[in-house]
Length: 86
Image 1 (tube, rainbow, N blue to C red):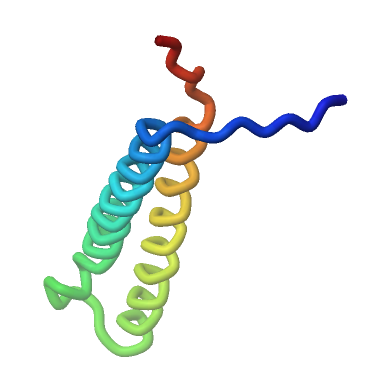
Image 2 (image 1 turned 180 degrees about the vertical axis):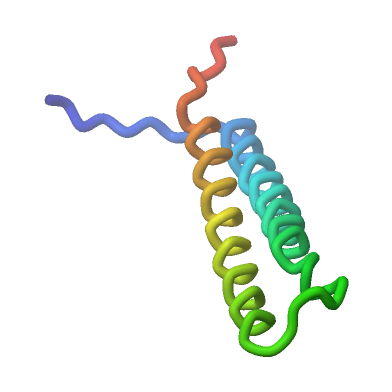
């Protein structure tokens, strides 16, 4: 088993940076949309009291899961791409 490390080119580093920022941005949008979707009954005033606080907690948890899932999916897909050949 050889342990040779090659230096990444500037283009490869730039591509990783762009992909990371893109994944962060889209993950934030997914999390926000998920939070709003779960919070709709609260925003329309259909629930109150304990159900309201439960929905707020559920919305936060769902948003966190959506954020992490989208980040992992986007970065995993980027890592699976074959390196470009010139």
